[in-house]
Length: 223
Image (tube, rainbow, N blue to C red):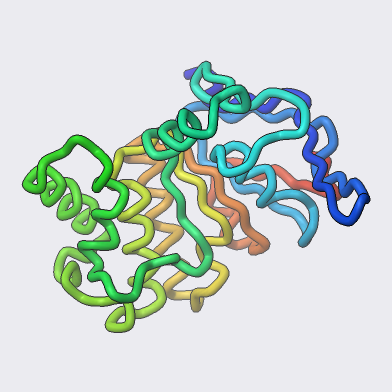
């Protein structure tokens, strides 16, 4: 297997009140297909910025971000939005579930813009919820679920489109140890059994230990 992600000499500079704030400094990184990589480092080191660039949420100031042969930094906004929907599954620290929607409806959201029929969407959603062990909670609302269950719904939502890459930003940061362990085991299973490429930002050495490889950022540089 070759590199599915290639970050070539990427710099990211934010502009605030006439000041330039450099966040990443000519950073290069390669991630193999089927890798499970943890990105570690203190707050402000650029971990989430790097994750957002790879996921197409943000754009580099300079450099290339090539995902499966496509330099996503050159895509138009509409093309990039479609690319994200087709290729990236997002898992966030605070779940980002919509409280007035059931688990089923939250997981179905990424499919609503797809050409799938209602029946096909139902099959995809049920399969994703079964994979995360929540087929018996699919019609529960977020407030009726534990934090660990909410995060597993979020993971089901991330995988329902069968994305190329899963990006997880502090996925266990808001969970107790038992719930965190469930989420980490689920990510490990998605990597091992389904060969999903996973990039996980974490402060937690225990969580990072579940990844196959860890990379450390310090003030915008890989060390």
